Length: 289
Length: 237
Image 1: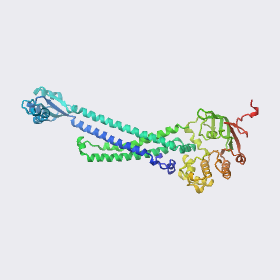
Image 2: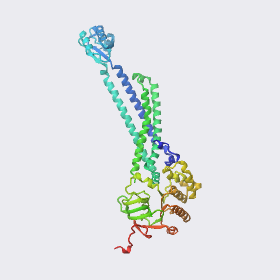
Image 3: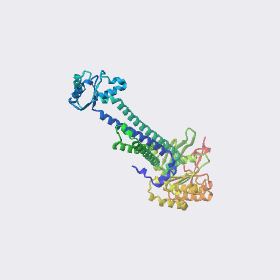
Image 4: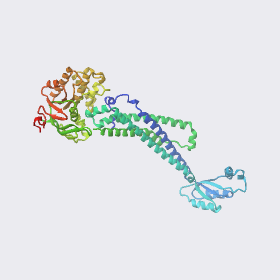
C-alpha cells in the first residue's frame, strides 16, 4: 500500500534534483506551526472550562437581603438540610468591606441592613426548594442562586473560543492543502516533458502520480514536523516562563490525551496534504488526451 | 497475414481546424517494414501519433494488435503503448538522467526489477555502440549518440511495432546507414517497423520495404499495400 513511498533511486531521479528549494515545505511548516499553537490553545481552553465547570457544578449561594442579624440561624438551617455537604457564611465584616467599595464609610454604619451570604455545596439530587423554604422561614427574602448561572457567560465564551480555534485549525489545514495543490500543478508543468515521455512508453497515470505523491508526502512531512517542533518549543517557553498563566487558568494544563492529539496533528496534516496532492495530480493527468 | 495495425476511415483534426488526416484506410502487416513518406505538412507525424497512441482520431476506427482502440478508456492504453517503440525526431531523452537510465525507463515502467534491468540495458547500449557512454547525460552526447540512445530506449522492450519519425534527420549519411541497419536487424527479429522519412536514398537502400505515401492528409498507394487504395487521378470524375 505504501510502496510508492519507497521509490527506487532511478525513480527518484526521474523528477531530478534541486526541487528541495521549493517553498512547499516552508509554507506547510508555517501552517503546521500555527495549527499547533491554535490547537494547543483550544485544548487548554477546553481544560480550563472543564476545571471551572467541575469546581462550581455543585456550588450554591444563599442570598439574604438584610439578613445579617440571623446569619448563624440561617447557616445552621442550611448545614442541617438534607443533601448539603458543606456550608460556610461570608463574615459580616467581609460583606461590609465589599460594600465599602460602593458606599464608602457609610458601609460601617450600624443602621445599614447588611445582606447575608452563605455559600454551600449540595449533593446531586438535593432538594434546593426545601432548603430555600427553610431559609425563608427564618428570613423571608432568602433566595438560592447557583454559581454556575453566574459563570455561564464565561463558560459560554470559552466554548465559543474553542470552536473558533477548531475553525482556525480547519481553515489553516485547508490553506495548507491549497498550497500543496498549487505546488503540485506547478510541478506538473515543470515536469511536463518527463510526464509525456513516460506516458509515451506506457506509464500509467498512477505510476506518474506516485512520483509526485512521494515528493508531496516528503515535503509535507518535513514541513509539518518542522512547524510542529517550532510550536512545541514556543509552547514550552510559554508554560515554563509565564507561570501566572497557569494560575489564571486554575492550573489547567495539557493532559496526555491532548499531547497525543497535538502529536498526531502534523501526521494528519501530512496525510491530508499527500492525499489532496495525489488527487490533484491524478485529476490533472486525466484532463490530458 | 495478421495485421499489427488497421485504420478504417480514420480522420483527425486538431481543435476546430480543418482535418489534417482524411479517410485513412490501411493495414500494417505483422513483421513488415514500411516507409512513410510525403511532403512536409502532409500529416506524417500526425499519422505516427495515431499509431503510437499519443492522439485519438476524431473519426473512424483504429485497431492495434487485433484490438479495437478507438473508444478505449485512457487506462486501457498503457499496455498497448508498451508494445510500441517510438523514436522521436527530437529524441525526447530526459536530460537530467543518464543514457543508462533513459534506456532503462521502459523496463522500469513495465515493472522490471532492478536486477533484471542492468544486463539488458548494458547489452542494448553495446548494440548501439554506446557501452562506454552509459553514465553520460544527453546534453553531453552528440546528436548521433542521442539518436542511438533514443533507439535503444525504443527497442529495449522488444516492441512488436517500432515507429520512427525522421530518425535520420539529425545525423550524417554514415550514421543514417548505421541506424537503418539497426532497424532492419530489428525487423528481421519480427518487429514491424514504420519509418517516416524524406530520404529517397534511404528508402531505395532498404530491401523489401513498402512505401506509404501521404499527400494533403490522404494516402496515395504506390505499392498496393493499402486496404482501400484511392483511385488513380485519371479515373476520377
